[in-house]
Length: 69
Image 1: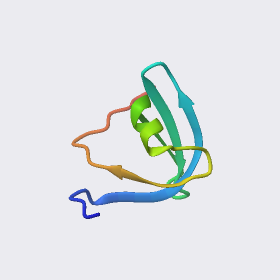
Image 2: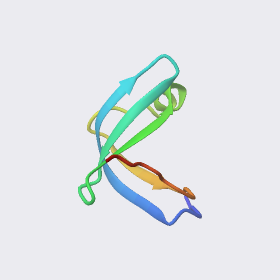
Image 3: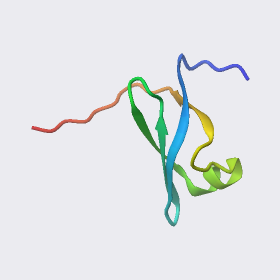
């Protein structure tokens, strides 16, 4: 599979939390640490994502904003 995204981090699924519509997938990528992805529940089920799976986090975004004082 070829991608235009340049930010690909391989890791291991450390947690999957299914909601009614969305799912939270935590991926341990070692460096920089844990990445949390919010994806559709349907996608997680179709990919059969579960704790311990080897997985890639592919990031293609124009901005990420988080702030706390």
